Amino acid sequence: MNQQQHARLRSQFPALAQEVNGHPLVYLDNAATTQKPLAVLDVIAHYYRADNANVHRAAHALSGRATRAFEAARETTARFINAPHSREIIWTRGTTEAINLVAQSWGSSELKAGDEIVLSTLEHHANIVPWQLIAQRTGAIIRVIPLDERGDLDLDAYHKLLGPRTRLISVAHVSNALGTVNPVAQIVAAAKAVGALTLIDGAQAVAHLEVDVQAIGCDFYAFSGHKLYGPTGIGVLWGRTELLERMPPWQAGGEMIDKVSFAGTSFNALPFKFEAGTPHIVGAIGLAAAIDFITQQDRAALVRHEQALTDYLVAGLRQVPGLRLVGEPRQRAGAVSFLLDDIHPQDAATLLDMQGIALRVGHHCAMPLMESLGLSGTMRASLACYNNRDDVDALLAALHRLEDFF
Image (tube, rainbow, N blue to C red; front, side, top):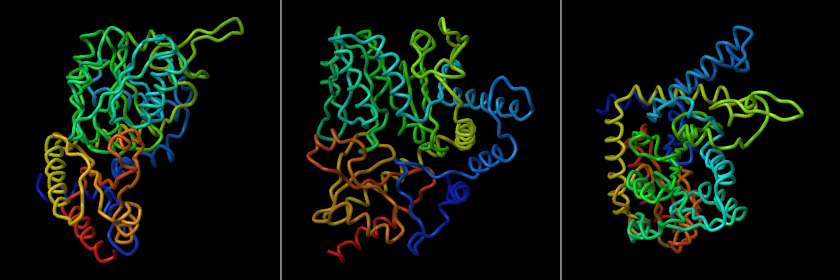
């Protein structure tokens, strides 16, 4: 991707053209949420202006248009991750709800005392706490894959954790804190060898990598729209049909039913069995617009651009006096964590914000990871397809200037 092509792509994100605190915005908080392109903003506005209606059982034109767009979004999402069937795409509020759905439905019905759930030290709280709650309820046991000295999963230790009691492995595709890209296909293959199921948290992966759930071989894959240039409040759980059909409903109400009487209730077919109540209609339509926007780009060129920019950022950070990188994974996507000697991360972030630079500080909802590293938190710069070398240069120059404040 040449500079002119990238400039055209960047121009599609109006939020990036603003000033913050008297400086051009340098947005490096993409692991938390991404900015939205005009294509997404326009389709959201159009829905509310022209097609606002509830979906399914349409008896009028607006509802028919809304339903067609809503279900077309499901088809678009299925193609995006190479799901075999669109009925396997379950709309959720985000990755968190998707993981909770599997935990509460599959976990509550399938796990028993002594069964083992394998997580990793890298996980976001959303892929830890739901399993802790289910373990407390069922008597299941949680095992944890440790890290090596670079911030990669210790795969030798992982293989030793697997055994006849292992029922589920649930790991991130990409770490939101360190940017570590996990070898998920390899992890899944090892799980299959002992008859365990796998769930992949793809929240940090879908914006940076081309995801193919069939190639990965996992049983469930979850991600959020707002980290993929789409709206907040919409997410996806993909699961294999045979598993989803066996799993009981989690939430109950309208749409997820087939027939209701006081004598009993029968439930709807997939995907509606897991979609109780009025869904986030415009969220799904907006997510499809974001997917269309991304897939219309040269994905391979975007991956190369982001990787080169990440390498440029890491190389530049190494030259900042007193700066320490946290984690040096063999493959990294999106996020880079670091610390500055003698400067509290919150103080540094505040001074960077005064210069228009947006990044994140804290534990990044990964407190067990931070505990394993002996840290309370880090500074995190996270990249997206619209970032460029000017953004990185602005951050590096500002970090060098911080010495003047302390």
